[in-house]
Image (cartoon, rainbow, N blue to C red):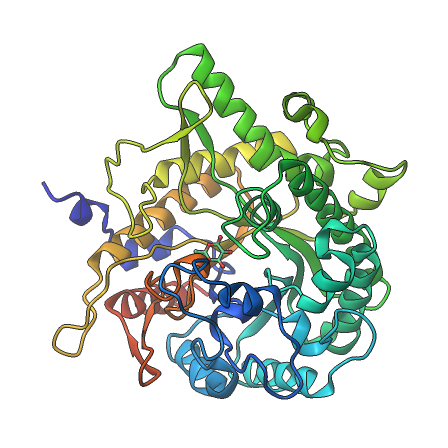
Length: 452
Ligand code: FCB
């Protein structure tokens, strides 16, 4: 039996499983699509810099042009309108609007986001913004050591307030950070992401500054906007490879470092005790009052879900059995974990309304006779949406879903090799082509609309 076929549910049935006001969208981020890396006064980001270091990016590429969205955003908005989507999640590039990360603003940078937001609104698409999707101004890294310095908290709050002041009345939501775990762990502990540092102590201090900057940014934005404010966390639920006690403990610690390290300060006002004990002397320096500043009331919680992790007794990640297969990233496809995890969050944290701010797969897509037959992505989508509906029926309050991503784009240290888009991008010509999954998603949205 072909598992892909059994995972594929017809859009009409699936559409019935979601409440009438459920929102459908797609997500992107600035560094991965915009290009125009040094145009109209934009400052360099740590990713512009990182891409220029030999060996950092698997295919040796950079983001100077990416999907050229800076110049082609009208065409890209038109694609979303054509699919009938409700909303679009994008990020502001901090160095585009404040090249040094402090001090002078770049009006030409703001003008780009004015054009984008106004074009979205005209097309009937709600703009959902993220302030930090990893493209720190390089100048801040050079001058103060970026996220390693506590001084960055004030700079980030100033940037957040300025965005809220200028755009707040036009944005449906503003998230402070995208996936602080990735910023801290991949950027400062494993070194896979910019700025490529490799110290657990630094990474945990960075994570603390990210959390503080989140709280301070929310407080600063509240003063100037009524837009819904929140944060986007990536959750990769942790499991033991076998039921052995040592493996269960390794999974529990990873859960503490990945899920609870970020959820607990925000919703409970403390770091998780077991993970804190595990990191020992690498624990971050926390000042009196920090948790009160971090624990701001939020209007929404964004969850990004892709896969799970399995651990052996030494705490090393091992490959899962992949009963439903693996994506082109090598990530195990586990929609049932998605459902289970959302229910857990609802029960353990009683969070504000949630949005699935990212979910999707990289696939080795090919154009065949003018089409991209990505049945694997349709199966991924339909099985995860089915899981989402199940979680919602069990009490998870989820208001919308953003597929990652609208376009094939720059997948960080993997370069352009990994294709996550509903829309295929030919990087030589910048030609966009809707994949079969885009048509499937548009069909689902259209059928859901009949419920409204
Ligand atoms: C997430 C990132 C996003 C994209 C997807 C595949 O971790 O937020 O930018 O790279 O993974």
